[in-house]
Length: 529
Image 1 (cartoon, rainbow, N blue to C red):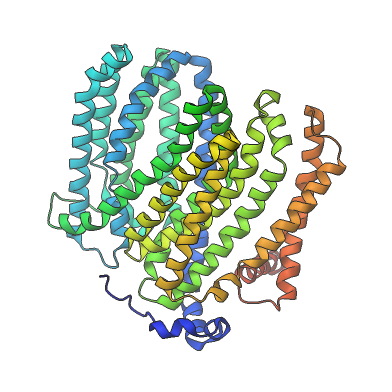
Image 2: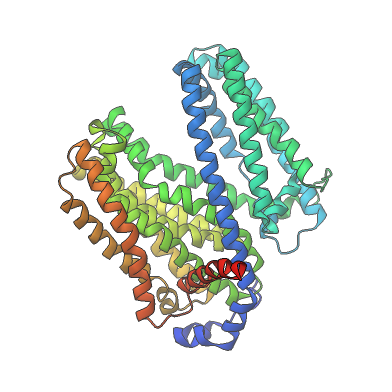
Protein backbone atom coordinates (compact mmCIF):
# COMPACT_ATOMS: atom_id res chain seq x y z
CA UNK A 1 0.00 0.00 0.00
CA UNK A 2 1.18 3.51 -0.77
CA UNK A 3 0.96 6.20 1.90
CA UNK A 4 -1.57 8.94 1.13
CA UNK A 5 -0.18 11.92 -0.71
CA UNK A 6 0.03 15.00 1.45
CA UNK A 7 -2.62 17.49 0.45
CA UNK A 8 -4.78 14.88 -1.31
CA UNK A 9 -8.54 15.36 -1.17
CA UNK A 10 -10.89 12.63 -0.09
CA UNK A 11 -12.31 10.27 -2.75
CA UNK A 12 -15.74 11.85 -2.60
CA UNK A 13 -14.26 15.14 -3.77
CA UNK A 14 -13.59 13.58 -7.17
CA UNK A 15 -17.33 13.80 -7.88
CA UNK A 16 -17.44 17.59 -7.66
CA UNK A 17 -18.07 19.44 -10.84
CA UNK A 18 -14.93 20.34 -12.81
CA UNK A 19 -15.82 24.01 -12.89
CA UNK A 20 -16.18 24.13 -9.11
CA UNK A 21 -12.73 22.59 -8.65
CA UNK A 22 -11.01 24.93 -11.08
CA UNK A 23 -12.64 28.01 -9.52
CA UNK A 24 -12.10 27.08 -5.89
CA UNK A 25 -10.02 29.49 -3.73
CA UNK A 26 -7.62 26.66 -2.83
CA UNK A 27 -7.00 25.99 -6.51
CA UNK A 28 -6.40 29.67 -7.28
CA UNK A 29 -4.06 30.17 -4.31
CA UNK A 30 -2.13 27.03 -5.23
CA UNK A 31 -1.84 28.20 -8.83
CA UNK A 32 -0.50 31.61 -7.80
CA UNK A 33 1.88 30.17 -5.21
CA UNK A 34 3.43 27.78 -7.69
CA UNK A 35 3.52 30.06 -10.73
CA UNK A 36 7.26 30.36 -10.08
CA UNK A 37 7.69 26.59 -10.36
CA UNK A 38 5.85 26.53 -13.68
CA UNK A 39 8.05 29.36 -14.91
CA UNK A 40 11.16 27.44 -13.92
CA UNK A 41 9.81 24.39 -15.73
CA UNK A 42 9.24 26.46 -18.87
CA UNK A 43 12.77 27.88 -18.73
CA UNK A 44 14.22 24.45 -18.06
CA UNK A 45 12.33 22.97 -20.99
CA UNK A 46 13.68 25.72 -23.24
CA UNK A 47 17.27 24.97 -22.12
CA UNK A 48 16.83 21.25 -22.69
CA UNK A 49 15.26 21.73 -26.13
CA UNK A 50 18.16 24.04 -26.96
CA UNK A 51 20.64 21.38 -25.87
CA UNK A 52 18.88 18.78 -28.01
CA UNK A 53 19.22 21.14 -30.98
CA UNK A 54 22.92 21.71 -30.23
CA UNK A 55 23.51 18.00 -29.71
CA UNK A 56 21.78 17.05 -32.96
CA UNK A 57 23.62 19.75 -34.91
CA UNK A 58 27.01 18.62 -33.60
CA UNK A 59 26.05 15.02 -34.33
CA UNK A 60 25.19 15.78 -37.94
CA UNK A 61 28.40 17.75 -38.50
CA UNK A 62 30.42 15.01 -36.79
CA UNK A 63 28.89 12.28 -38.93
CA UNK A 64 29.54 14.21 -42.14
CA UNK A 65 33.20 14.82 -41.25
CA UNK A 66 33.87 11.32 -39.94
CA UNK A 67 32.24 9.76 -42.98
CA UNK A 68 34.91 11.50 -45.06
CA UNK A 69 37.79 10.45 -42.82
CA UNK A 70 36.85 6.89 -41.88
CA UNK A 71 35.62 3.80 -43.67
CA UNK A 72 32.19 2.17 -43.26
CA UNK A 73 34.04 -0.83 -41.79
CA UNK A 74 35.33 1.39 -38.97
CA UNK A 75 31.79 2.36 -38.01
CA UNK A 76 30.66 -1.24 -38.37
CA UNK A 77 33.34 -2.55 -36.00
CA UNK A 78 32.36 -0.12 -33.24
CA UNK A 79 28.68 -0.89 -33.88
CA UNK A 80 29.42 -4.59 -33.30
CA UNK A 81 30.93 -3.78 -29.93
CA UNK A 82 28.12 -1.43 -28.95
CA UNK A 83 25.44 -3.97 -29.89
CA UNK A 84 26.69 -6.06 -26.97
CA UNK A 85 27.60 -3.25 -24.59
CA UNK A 86 24.18 -1.62 -25.08
CA UNK A 87 22.51 -4.76 -23.75
CA UNK A 88 24.77 -4.75 -20.69
CA UNK A 89 24.07 -1.05 -20.08
CA UNK A 90 20.35 -1.70 -20.36
CA UNK A 91 20.57 -4.46 -17.76
CA UNK A 92 22.26 -2.04 -15.34
CA UNK A 93 20.14 1.08 -15.97
CA UNK A 94 18.95 1.65 -12.40
CA UNK A 95 18.75 5.47 -12.72
CA UNK A 96 19.64 6.19 -9.09
CA UNK A 97 19.76 9.91 -9.91
CA UNK A 98 16.02 9.85 -10.65
CA UNK A 99 15.45 8.46 -7.16
CA UNK A 100 17.40 11.41 -5.69
CA UNK A 101 15.34 13.94 -7.64
CA UNK A 102 12.09 12.30 -6.61
CA UNK A 103 12.89 12.33 -2.90
CA UNK A 104 11.57 15.42 -1.14
CA UNK A 105 14.59 15.83 1.16
CA UNK A 106 17.48 13.50 0.27
CA UNK A 107 20.24 13.36 2.87
CA UNK A 108 23.96 13.08 2.30
CA UNK A 109 23.84 9.32 2.82
CA UNK A 110 21.41 9.04 -0.12
CA UNK A 111 23.88 10.83 -2.39
CA UNK A 112 26.82 8.80 -1.10
CA UNK A 113 24.94 5.54 -1.56
CA UNK A 114 23.87 6.46 -5.10
CA UNK A 115 27.48 7.35 -5.99
CA UNK A 116 28.82 4.12 -4.52
CA UNK A 117 26.18 2.05 -6.31
CA UNK A 118 27.01 3.81 -9.59
CA UNK A 119 30.67 2.80 -9.14
CA UNK A 120 29.71 -0.80 -8.40
CA UNK A 121 27.33 -0.97 -11.37
CA UNK A 122 29.96 0.54 -13.68
CA UNK A 123 32.58 -1.88 -12.38
CA UNK A 124 30.23 -4.80 -12.93
CA UNK A 125 29.40 -3.61 -16.43
CA UNK A 126 33.09 -3.21 -17.25
CA UNK A 127 33.90 -6.70 -15.98
CA UNK A 128 31.07 -8.26 -18.02
CA UNK A 129 32.17 -6.30 -21.09
CA UNK A 130 35.75 -7.57 -20.68
CA UNK A 131 34.52 -11.13 -20.13
CA UNK A 132 32.48 -11.00 -23.35
CA UNK A 133 35.27 -9.48 -25.46
CA UNK A 134 36.73 -12.80 -26.61
CA UNK A 135 33.36 -14.51 -27.23
CA UNK A 136 32.17 -11.46 -29.18
CA UNK A 137 35.36 -11.48 -31.23
CA UNK A 138 34.84 -15.15 -32.06
CA UNK A 139 31.13 -14.62 -32.84
CA UNK A 140 31.74 -11.74 -35.26
CA UNK A 141 35.00 -13.20 -36.55
CA UNK A 142 36.99 -10.02 -35.92
CA UNK A 143 39.87 -10.14 -33.38
CA UNK A 144 39.99 -6.32 -33.22
CA UNK A 145 36.83 -6.40 -31.10
CA UNK A 146 38.78 -7.54 -28.05
CA UNK A 147 40.80 -4.33 -27.73
CA UNK A 148 37.80 -2.17 -28.63
CA UNK A 149 35.57 -3.71 -25.98
CA UNK A 150 38.28 -3.59 -23.33
CA UNK A 151 38.87 0.10 -24.01
CA UNK A 152 35.15 0.96 -23.89
CA UNK A 153 34.73 -1.15 -20.75
CA UNK A 154 37.57 0.68 -19.00
CA UNK A 155 36.01 4.04 -19.87
CA UNK A 156 32.67 2.81 -18.57
CA UNK A 157 34.29 1.93 -15.24
CA UNK A 158 35.82 5.40 -14.93
CA UNK A 159 32.47 7.03 -15.71
CA UNK A 160 31.03 5.39 -12.60
CA UNK A 161 33.00 7.91 -10.51
CA UNK A 162 31.07 10.87 -11.95
CA UNK A 163 30.04 13.28 -9.19
CA UNK A 164 26.48 12.43 -8.21
CA UNK A 165 26.12 15.98 -6.90
CA UNK A 166 25.39 17.19 -10.44
CA UNK A 167 21.90 15.80 -9.98
CA UNK A 168 21.26 18.96 -7.95
CA UNK A 169 21.31 20.99 -11.17
CA UNK A 170 18.04 19.28 -12.05
CA UNK A 171 16.73 19.15 -8.49
CA UNK A 172 17.23 22.91 -8.16
CA UNK A 173 15.88 23.55 -11.66
CA UNK A 174 19.25 25.05 -12.63
CA UNK A 175 19.02 23.96 -16.25
CA UNK A 176 21.30 26.72 -17.49
CA UNK A 177 24.17 25.05 -15.63
CA UNK A 178 22.95 21.65 -16.78
CA UNK A 179 23.10 22.94 -20.35
CA UNK A 180 26.67 24.18 -19.90
CA UNK A 181 27.71 20.82 -18.48
CA UNK A 182 26.13 18.77 -21.27
CA UNK A 183 27.12 21.13 -24.09
CA UNK A 184 30.74 21.39 -22.92
CA UNK A 185 31.01 17.62 -22.68
CA UNK A 186 29.52 17.24 -26.17
CA UNK A 187 31.78 19.84 -27.73
CA UNK A 188 34.99 18.43 -26.18
CA UNK A 189 34.02 14.95 -27.32
CA UNK A 190 33.40 16.25 -30.85
CA UNK A 191 36.76 18.02 -31.06
CA UNK A 192 38.70 15.03 -29.70
CA UNK A 193 36.93 12.58 -32.01
CA UNK A 194 37.61 14.67 -35.11
CA UNK A 195 41.22 15.23 -34.04
CA UNK A 196 41.71 11.48 -33.48
CA UNK A 197 40.17 10.73 -36.87
CA UNK A 198 42.56 13.13 -38.58
CA UNK A 199 45.49 11.59 -36.71
CA UNK A 200 44.73 7.86 -36.86
CA UNK A 201 42.25 7.45 -39.75
CA UNK A 202 40.88 4.32 -38.07
CA UNK A 203 38.11 3.02 -35.83
CA UNK A 204 40.19 4.05 -32.83
CA UNK A 205 39.01 7.62 -33.39
CA UNK A 206 35.46 6.54 -32.53
CA UNK A 207 36.62 4.58 -29.48
CA UNK A 208 38.75 7.49 -28.26
CA UNK A 209 35.82 9.85 -28.74
CA UNK A 210 33.49 7.63 -26.71
CA UNK A 211 36.04 7.23 -23.93
CA UNK A 212 36.72 10.98 -23.91
CA UNK A 213 33.03 11.73 -23.47
CA UNK A 214 32.84 9.55 -20.37
CA UNK A 215 36.08 10.84 -18.83
CA UNK A 216 35.27 14.50 -19.55
CA UNK A 217 31.90 13.95 -17.89
CA UNK A 218 33.68 12.86 -14.71
CA UNK A 219 36.11 15.81 -14.74
CA UNK A 220 33.39 18.39 -15.41
CA UNK A 221 31.14 16.96 -12.72
CA UNK A 222 33.73 17.76 -10.05
CA UNK A 223 34.75 21.06 -11.60
CA UNK A 224 31.17 22.38 -11.75
CA UNK A 225 29.73 20.90 -8.54
CA UNK A 226 31.38 21.40 -5.11
CA UNK A 227 29.74 18.33 -3.54
CA UNK A 228 32.26 15.57 -2.77
CA UNK A 229 30.70 12.11 -2.38
CA UNK A 230 31.97 9.39 -0.06
CA UNK A 231 31.71 5.62 -0.17
CA UNK A 232 28.58 4.36 1.56
CA UNK A 233 25.91 1.69 1.15
CA UNK A 234 23.68 2.89 3.98
CA UNK A 235 20.59 3.56 1.85
CA UNK A 236 20.98 0.73 -0.64
CA UNK A 237 17.68 -0.98 0.08
CA UNK A 238 15.77 2.31 -0.03
CA UNK A 239 17.21 3.32 -3.41
CA UNK A 240 16.77 -0.12 -4.94
CA UNK A 241 13.12 -0.23 -3.87
CA UNK A 242 12.54 2.71 -6.24
CA UNK A 243 15.23 2.24 -8.89
CA UNK A 244 14.41 -1.44 -9.38
CA UNK A 245 11.13 -0.40 -10.96
CA UNK A 246 12.96 2.13 -13.14
CA UNK A 247 15.19 -0.68 -14.43
CA UNK A 248 12.12 -2.72 -15.39
CA UNK A 249 10.63 0.34 -17.09
CA UNK A 250 13.83 1.04 -19.02
CA UNK A 251 13.97 -2.54 -20.28
CA UNK A 252 10.29 -2.48 -21.25
CA UNK A 253 10.79 0.79 -23.16
CA UNK A 254 13.69 -0.62 -25.17
CA UNK A 255 11.80 -3.82 -25.96
CA UNK A 256 8.83 -1.72 -27.10
CA UNK A 257 11.04 0.18 -29.52
CA UNK A 258 12.58 -3.01 -30.94
CA UNK A 259 9.51 -5.28 -31.34
CA UNK A 260 8.18 -3.57 -34.52
CA UNK A 261 11.61 -3.67 -36.15
CA UNK A 262 11.99 -7.33 -35.27
CA UNK A 263 8.66 -8.22 -36.90
CA UNK A 264 9.28 -6.06 -39.98
CA UNK A 265 12.80 -7.42 -40.51
CA UNK A 266 11.69 -11.01 -39.97
CA UNK A 267 8.63 -10.77 -42.22
CA UNK A 268 9.60 -8.36 -44.99
CA UNK A 269 13.41 -8.19 -45.20
CA UNK A 270 16.12 -5.59 -44.91
CA UNK A 271 14.87 -3.10 -47.51
CA UNK A 272 11.41 -2.80 -45.99
CA UNK A 273 12.91 -2.64 -42.50
CA UNK A 274 15.06 0.27 -43.64
CA UNK A 275 12.01 2.14 -44.91
CA UNK A 276 10.08 1.43 -41.73
CA UNK A 277 12.98 2.49 -39.48
CA UNK A 278 13.58 5.78 -41.27
CA UNK A 279 9.85 6.47 -41.49
CA UNK A 280 9.50 5.82 -37.77
CA UNK A 281 12.36 8.20 -36.97
CA UNK A 282 10.79 10.99 -39.02
CA UNK A 283 7.33 10.39 -37.54
CA UNK A 284 8.72 10.47 -33.99
CA UNK A 285 10.79 13.66 -34.44
CA UNK A 286 8.34 15.81 -32.51
CA UNK A 287 8.42 13.37 -29.62
CA UNK A 288 12.18 12.83 -29.51
CA UNK A 289 13.21 16.43 -30.16
CA UNK A 290 10.55 18.25 -28.13
CA UNK A 291 8.78 16.01 -25.62
CA UNK A 292 11.84 14.15 -24.29
CA UNK A 293 13.77 17.31 -23.32
CA UNK A 294 10.59 18.92 -21.96
CA UNK A 295 9.95 15.90 -19.74
CA UNK A 296 13.53 16.15 -18.47
CA UNK A 297 12.58 19.56 -17.09
CA UNK A 298 9.06 18.51 -16.06
CA UNK A 299 10.11 15.72 -13.69
CA UNK A 300 11.98 17.82 -11.08
CA UNK A 301 9.18 20.39 -11.28
CA UNK A 302 6.61 17.72 -10.52
CA UNK A 303 8.79 16.42 -7.68
CA UNK A 304 8.71 19.85 -6.02
CA UNK A 305 4.92 19.82 -5.98
CA UNK A 306 4.30 16.34 -4.59
CA UNK A 307 3.13 17.73 -1.24
CA UNK A 308 0.72 20.20 -2.85
CA UNK A 309 -1.76 18.13 -4.82
CA UNK A 310 -3.84 21.05 -6.20
CA UNK A 311 -0.67 22.65 -7.59
CA UNK A 312 0.53 19.29 -8.92
CA UNK A 313 -2.84 18.82 -10.60
CA UNK A 314 -2.81 22.27 -12.18
CA UNK A 315 0.76 21.85 -13.40
CA UNK A 316 -0.02 18.43 -14.86
CA UNK A 317 -2.97 19.84 -16.81
CA UNK A 318 -0.93 22.80 -18.05
CA UNK A 319 2.00 20.57 -19.02
CA UNK A 320 -0.23 18.18 -20.97
CA UNK A 321 -1.91 21.08 -22.74
CA UNK A 322 1.45 22.70 -23.56
CA UNK A 323 2.90 19.45 -24.90
CA UNK A 324 -0.21 18.81 -26.97
CA UNK A 325 -0.17 22.38 -28.26
CA UNK A 326 3.45 22.01 -29.41
CA UNK A 327 3.51 18.42 -30.62
CA UNK A 328 0.09 17.75 -32.14
CA UNK A 329 0.27 20.34 -34.97
CA UNK A 330 3.75 19.09 -35.88
CA UNK A 331 2.54 15.49 -35.96
CA UNK A 332 -0.53 16.39 -38.02
CA UNK A 333 1.60 18.42 -40.42
CA UNK A 334 4.13 15.61 -40.83
CA UNK A 335 1.32 13.11 -41.45
CA UNK A 336 -0.45 15.27 -44.01
CA UNK A 337 2.77 16.16 -45.85
CA UNK A 338 4.45 12.76 -45.53
CA UNK A 339 4.57 12.19 -49.30
CA UNK A 340 6.32 15.47 -50.23
CA UNK A 341 8.61 15.21 -47.18
CA UNK A 342 9.80 11.74 -48.21
CA UNK A 343 10.33 12.74 -51.82
CA UNK A 344 12.34 15.82 -50.87
CA UNK A 345 14.44 14.42 -48.03
CA UNK A 346 14.83 10.77 -48.98
CA UNK A 347 14.03 10.33 -52.66
CA UNK A 348 11.62 8.23 -54.70
CA UNK A 349 13.16 4.94 -53.59
CA UNK A 350 11.88 5.59 -50.07
CA UNK A 351 8.22 5.85 -51.06
CA UNK A 352 7.35 2.90 -48.82
CA UNK A 353 8.12 5.08 -45.80
CA UNK A 354 5.41 7.69 -46.50
CA UNK A 355 2.34 5.70 -45.35
CA UNK A 356 4.31 4.53 -42.31
CA UNK A 357 4.94 8.17 -41.36
CA UNK A 358 1.26 9.01 -41.80
CA UNK A 359 0.26 6.47 -39.14
CA UNK A 360 3.19 6.65 -36.73
CA UNK A 361 3.03 10.45 -36.52
CA UNK A 362 -0.26 10.10 -34.66
CA UNK A 363 1.20 7.33 -32.48
CA UNK A 364 3.93 9.79 -31.53
CA UNK A 365 1.37 12.43 -30.52
CA UNK A 366 -0.44 9.91 -28.30
CA UNK A 367 2.86 8.80 -26.76
CA UNK A 368 3.67 12.41 -25.92
CA UNK A 369 0.64 12.62 -23.62
CA UNK A 370 1.38 9.25 -22.02
CA UNK A 371 5.01 10.19 -21.38
CA UNK A 372 3.94 13.26 -19.42
CA UNK A 373 1.65 11.10 -17.29
CA UNK A 374 4.55 8.72 -16.68
CA UNK A 375 6.75 11.58 -15.45
CA UNK A 376 3.97 12.48 -13.00
CA UNK A 377 3.69 8.91 -11.65
CA UNK A 378 7.44 8.64 -11.08
CA UNK A 379 7.52 12.04 -9.35
CA UNK A 380 4.76 10.80 -7.04
CA UNK A 381 6.96 7.84 -6.12
CA UNK A 382 4.83 5.29 -7.95
CA UNK A 383 7.02 3.92 -10.76
CA UNK A 384 5.11 0.65 -10.73
CA UNK A 385 2.19 2.48 -12.37
CA UNK A 386 4.55 3.19 -15.26
CA UNK A 387 5.40 -0.51 -15.40
CA UNK A 388 1.70 -1.36 -15.74
CA UNK A 389 1.31 1.10 -18.62
CA UNK A 390 4.42 -0.05 -20.48
CA UNK A 391 3.63 -3.75 -20.11
CA UNK A 392 0.07 -3.11 -21.29
CA UNK A 393 1.41 -1.37 -24.37
CA UNK A 394 3.90 -4.16 -25.02
CA UNK A 395 1.22 -6.85 -24.77
CA UNK A 396 -1.12 -4.89 -27.05
CA UNK A 397 1.65 -4.30 -29.57
CA UNK A 398 2.59 -7.96 -29.79
CA UNK A 399 -1.06 -9.03 -30.08
CA UNK A 400 -1.96 -6.42 -32.71
CA UNK A 401 1.13 -7.16 -34.82
CA UNK A 402 0.24 -10.84 -34.87
CA UNK A 403 -3.35 -9.96 -35.78
CA UNK A 404 -2.73 -7.34 -38.49
CA UNK A 405 0.45 -8.34 -40.30
CA UNK A 406 -1.22 -11.15 -42.24
CA UNK A 407 -3.94 -8.89 -43.69
CA UNK A 408 -2.23 -5.50 -43.89
CA UNK A 409 1.43 -6.36 -44.35
CA UNK A 410 3.88 -3.61 -43.40
CA UNK A 411 1.10 -1.18 -42.52
CA UNK A 412 -0.26 -3.74 -40.10
CA UNK A 413 2.79 -3.13 -37.91
CA UNK A 414 2.23 0.63 -38.06
CA UNK A 415 -1.46 0.18 -37.18
CA UNK A 416 -0.42 -2.07 -34.29
CA UNK A 417 1.90 0.66 -32.93
CA UNK A 418 -0.91 3.22 -33.09
CA UNK A 419 -3.44 0.94 -31.38
CA UNK A 420 -0.90 0.01 -28.70
CA UNK A 421 -0.20 3.71 -28.05
CA UNK A 422 -3.93 4.44 -27.78
CA UNK A 423 -4.40 1.44 -25.51
CA UNK A 424 -1.65 2.53 -23.14
CA UNK A 425 -3.17 6.03 -23.02
CA UNK A 426 -6.57 4.50 -22.25
CA UNK A 427 -4.98 2.70 -19.30
CA UNK A 428 -2.90 5.71 -18.20
CA UNK A 429 -5.68 8.31 -18.06
CA UNK A 430 -7.96 6.56 -15.52
CA UNK A 431 -4.90 5.98 -13.34
CA UNK A 432 -4.05 9.68 -13.62
CA UNK A 433 -7.61 10.79 -12.80
CA UNK A 434 -7.77 8.51 -9.78
CA UNK A 435 -4.27 9.28 -8.49
CA UNK A 436 -4.64 13.07 -8.73
CA UNK A 437 -8.39 13.13 -7.96
CA UNK A 438 -8.71 14.92 -11.28
CA UNK A 439 -12.15 15.40 -12.88
CA UNK A 440 -12.31 14.29 -16.49
CA UNK A 441 -14.05 17.48 -17.60
CA UNK A 442 -11.42 19.63 -15.93
CA UNK A 443 -8.69 17.74 -17.77
CA UNK A 444 -10.34 17.84 -21.19
CA UNK A 445 -11.33 21.50 -20.87
CA UNK A 446 -7.71 22.49 -21.52
CA UNK A 447 -7.01 20.00 -24.32
CA UNK A 448 -9.85 20.40 -26.79
CA UNK A 449 -8.56 23.64 -28.32
CA UNK A 450 -5.23 22.26 -29.63
CA UNK A 451 -7.10 19.14 -30.79
CA UNK A 452 -9.64 21.13 -32.81
CA UNK A 453 -7.04 23.61 -34.04
CA UNK A 454 -4.74 20.82 -35.23
CA UNK A 455 -7.56 19.13 -37.13
CA UNK A 456 -8.55 22.37 -38.85
CA UNK A 457 -4.91 23.19 -39.57
CA UNK A 458 -4.43 19.72 -41.06
CA UNK A 459 -7.37 20.30 -43.37
CA UNK A 460 -5.97 23.67 -44.40
CA UNK A 461 -2.47 22.29 -44.99
CA UNK A 462 -3.88 19.43 -47.07
CA UNK A 463 -5.97 21.86 -49.15
CA UNK A 464 -2.95 24.14 -49.65
CA UNK A 465 -0.75 21.25 -50.75
CA UNK A 466 -3.41 20.06 -53.19
CA UNK A 467 -3.85 23.56 -54.58
CA UNK A 468 -0.09 23.85 -55.10
CA UNK A 469 -0.23 20.99 -57.57
CA UNK A 470 1.03 17.43 -57.70
CA UNK A 471 3.75 16.48 -55.25
CA UNK A 472 4.67 13.37 -57.20
CA UNK A 473 7.94 14.85 -58.46
CA UNK A 474 10.82 16.48 -56.61
CA UNK A 475 9.93 19.95 -57.85
CA UNK A 476 6.27 19.35 -57.04
CA UNK A 477 7.21 18.25 -53.52
CA UNK A 478 9.24 21.44 -53.01
CA UNK A 479 6.37 23.64 -54.19
CA UNK A 480 3.84 21.76 -52.04
CA UNK A 481 5.97 22.19 -48.93
CA UNK A 482 6.75 25.84 -49.65
CA UNK A 483 3.03 26.58 -49.86
CA UNK A 484 1.61 24.25 -47.22
CA UNK A 485 4.11 24.75 -44.37
CA UNK A 486 3.60 28.55 -44.10
CA UNK A 487 -0.16 28.03 -44.28
CA UNK A 488 0.00 25.66 -41.33
CA UNK A 489 2.38 27.93 -39.38
CA UNK A 490 -0.04 30.87 -39.71
CA UNK A 491 -3.31 28.97 -39.47
CA UNK A 492 -2.68 27.01 -36.29
CA UNK A 493 -1.89 29.85 -33.85
CA UNK A 494 -4.74 31.93 -35.28
CA UNK A 495 -7.24 29.10 -34.72
CA UNK A 496 -5.96 28.43 -31.19
CA UNK A 497 -6.21 32.15 -30.35
CA UNK A 498 -9.73 32.37 -31.79
CA UNK A 499 -10.91 29.31 -29.85
CA UNK A 500 -9.38 30.69 -26.66
CA UNK A 501 -11.14 34.04 -27.12
CA UNK A 502 -14.46 32.35 -27.92
CA UNK A 503 -14.05 30.27 -24.74
CA UNK A 504 -13.92 33.43 -22.63
CA UNK A 505 -10.13 33.59 -22.13
CA UNK A 506 -9.93 30.80 -19.54
CA UNK A 507 -6.86 30.52 -17.30
CA UNK A 508 -4.77 28.10 -19.35
CA UNK A 509 -1.56 27.65 -21.31
CA UNK A 510 -2.78 30.24 -23.80
CA UNK A 511 -3.01 32.74 -20.94
CA UNK A 512 0.61 32.10 -20.00
CA UNK A 513 1.69 32.58 -23.63
CA UNK A 514 -0.22 35.86 -23.92
CA UNK A 515 1.33 37.18 -20.70
CA UNK A 516 4.80 36.25 -21.87
CA UNK A 517 4.25 38.01 -25.21
CA UNK A 518 3.00 41.10 -23.38
CA UNK A 519 6.15 41.11 -21.22
CA UNK A 520 8.35 40.84 -24.32
CA UNK A 521 6.49 43.69 -26.02
CA UNK A 522 6.76 45.93 -22.95
CA UNK A 523 10.54 45.59 -22.67
CA UNK A 524 11.45 47.60 -25.83
CA UNK A 525 8.93 50.29 -24.84
CA UNK A 526 10.33 50.53 -21.32
CA UNK A 527 13.90 50.64 -22.62
CA UNK A 528 12.94 53.37 -25.11
CA UNK A 529 11.33 55.41 -22.35
